Length: 129
Length: 501
Image 1 (cartoon, rainbow over the protein chains, first blue to last red):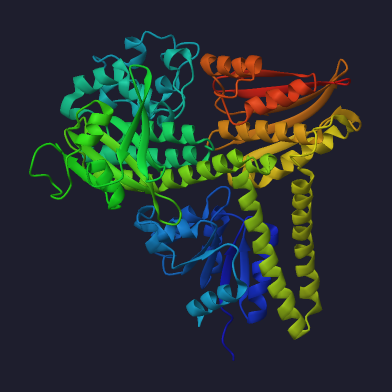
Image 2 (image 1 turned 30 degrees about the horizontal axis):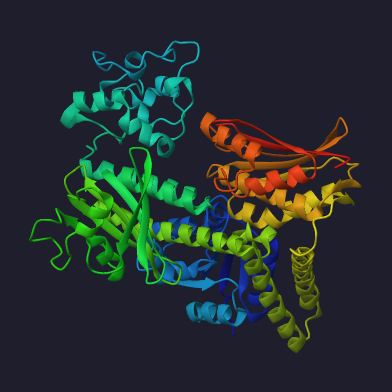
């Protein structure tokens, strides 16, 4: 191959979830870096320059929605695709009035928890292949 | 120096917290606001300063105090004195705030606050009261009403207060009124003078049915449908009679976003209410939101780890199997604990009071609510005193008491920095269970209501979720319940259980 590994930043406040998502992605040839909250995530995007961000919505400090918003409003990071992992995706995507255009327009994709690992890999591959 | 000809709030309101006093108010200390509306420090823009000492009591932030501020005579005085030059918010120098800009800033700030508040409500009446109040303030309407679809055939039901009396409103779910039209067509209606043709939205009918039901006349109306998470219409939020003459596009923008939050809150409260009414799994239904989050969490972990293990077997990666298995194990255990908890709840079985580990009962109840506490960023902690291993109590009853009290405490917590502490103790031959929070606390009236519930166990008008149940259970133990509360500092509920019931 000779090609550099694609780097995914996984952001979740739950250690088990973080470990699990990493273990799903790494054997498929992705490099995984992690962050435990939105504030840390913003820093990691800058220092690690990931190719994709997987962002949990329910987090203390800065939640996933707010973190996504910040990423998408900065010229340096707005090109990095963001996938939100959320328990409330249905509400947002089906609602006639999404909470501002922000949510619908800004994250590239939503995955609803419990997340199907096959689907997760498909979505990740669709951004990184 | 700014001109000091004009009076600052501490002068007009004649308080003792001005600059140079022994205990100056935050508004008197905010030097960065000097000159705004020609005031000294924040003396003429005090409504933007959190924690001001109005009426001798520390106030909240803008979202908390806005209703009081917007009606305050000093605020109105400044607005009148400044006229066109009036500054509602402090902006960076050089920006002149226009009406539209500051109305939008207020709405955005409030929307953020409201979302947090609504998410912290479990009780349908509380959700509706909060919704109505905020919709009215933020669209600057004279009236606001939330109408929800009920019954068969479905009709729109709402309730409002007129001269201190609750008035029920019922509107047909059809095109015969502007409000019905919004619900049936799942479409926002924003009209000015619905009695006059032509209307802005041509096919929207008069609002007569609504007005007759409400005993009033609508001059301008904003009606926005509210949806559940599947996109079905649950009802309509209305704001009527804009004080500006008509509802702006901004008002409509705000209400439509607000309706999404209201829909979520109403749905959550209803699920909880239905589950409680059905009387099934009563100890758990009170934390249905917590339960659903818990199950989602577990399902997420099981789906993920089982995938990892399956793939690791295919590829012969033992290390991955081991790590994933540990995660899987932890979650299977969580699930098993929950099942045990559900199974031990048997409504047919008499509620026996027998010696048992009181701390274990309390800890079980607290652990059920940890997930919910986490999603709401509330720190839920326990401090359990040893030596209560064989204290006579009904395991199921005390479990329900603790769940009830903790849910109430979490509801009282402010949107950030909430703490709920559950402690056990022993004194003078009695076991003590204490649930305290650092939430909004109760005013004299709410506290009186709670005490009334203690005295009468009145089931018809409980002051909170399940408090009558707690009273009932504690009574059967021959124990007693005490409450201590202070506005702005939080509340503490204490259960005393004697050794001999």
